[in-house]
Image (cartoon, rainbow, N blue to C red; front, top):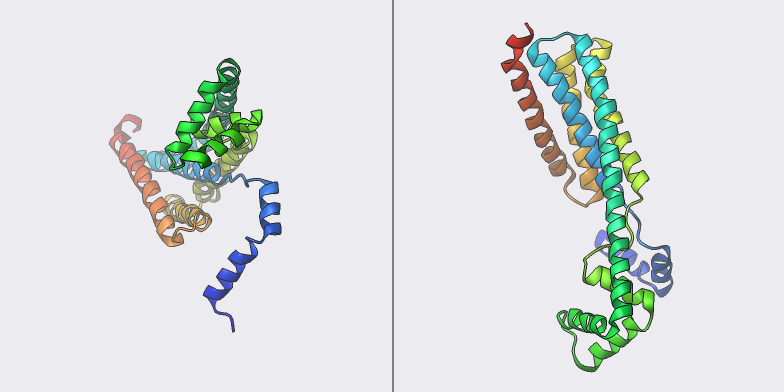
Length: 248
């Protein structure tokens, strides 16, 4: 019977047959939006529960919690989504700007650009005939030459996230996860206590999901996210208590 280790090795070998490698490289890298999900989910939970904690600490009514929480979900969620859209779009624009610069440099002084390629790969340990052959190969095709400079000189990624998808994932995660702390207030079920428990569970769940995707211990990742969110909630609650006199 094949044990777990042998099964894993067999799976790795199956992924590295010539046909499997060809198919994988032809499909290109898979773009992950995990960062955008975690970014939106954690911030949505933190900021909404911060509103809940602050209002509860100040001793205000349930209606105020719901109104402020809902306003936060829409306003902050949209703001985060737009910010993520613009930031992701800026990353792509930076790549295109680098491409324009390198095209100009190659056209104006190709030998200088070849020397840059030579020195980049010399620093990686290549030398002699192998280095010169690589330089010739990379610079013999214009697009490959420019792509290499973008990656090696600027440290940029040729393909990245689609801006509108990143923004959509961020907004959806913010609103869906961020709405959880408000549910007990809407239903009138021991609002702050139940909201605290739901929020703690949501923090842990988001961290655990992140851990599974990045092959990190899921409960360690969950606990880490739980701690970060808990600190934010505690700070908001303390501020609410300290300012209670202003609204009494």
